[in-house]
Length: 48
Image 1 (cartoon, one colour):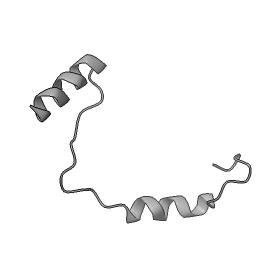
Image 2: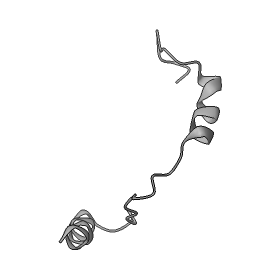
Image 3: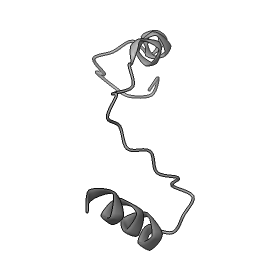
């Protein structure tokens, strides 16, 4: 972020922004270490 020109947010504020984030109660968690096809299948079964 420090190398971005005309960036709207001071990079020193980034950690506080992440600290303030709240996880949504209905979030879907998927292990992204799987291959894309496996991730697609996991999501497909979740929505069926």
